[in-house]
Image 1: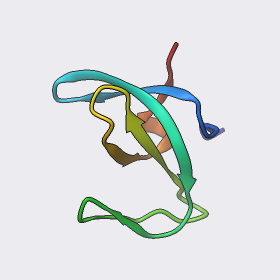
Image 2 (image 1 turned 30 degrees about the vertical axis):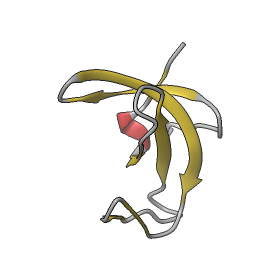
Image 3 (image 1 turned 45 degrees about the vertical axis):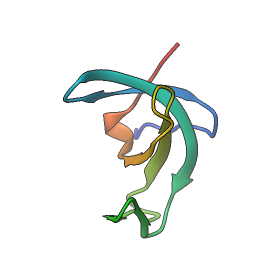
Image 4 (image 1 turned 120 degrees about the vertical axis):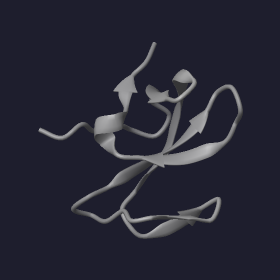
Length: 70
């Protein structure tokens, strides 16, 4: 069963600098662009737009890259 998150959920993900925490802004189910990068999301392959609590920057992540955070 694929992971599912709701808007406002606190999540964590790994980066080259270590673990980053933030919150889910929205579930993306269509192609979009963030900071000049294309996000190839679809209804069959959704991604989540997350906002870092430290930097405030937004990024798209596949559900398997995210985990619930406290």
